[in-house]
Length: 99
Picture 1 (tube, rainbow, N blue to C red):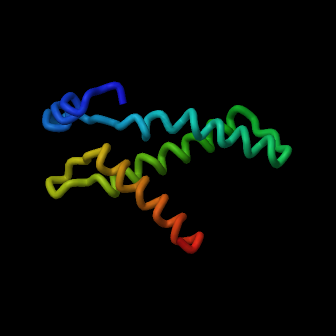
Picture 2: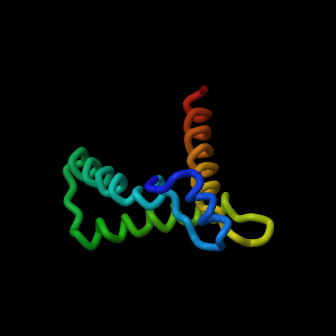
């Protein structure tokens, strides 16, 4: 998050799109996860295969942000959507583990 909370609020109130760091920076984390999967499973994916998997991951992140962050007026609050989607993912994982 390279912006102060006040700057984020200003952008959100200015009808500009603000994508939160946790969503836009997910690509690097996702590629690291794909690399770990390849190493653990002794796989080799081409650059194109990794890129396609990354595109799907990022598309899913965007869809979740839109789903959870769409406001009554049709605008999308991406930080809110990312926070809600992230919370639900963690909560569902905890429930699946019996917590």
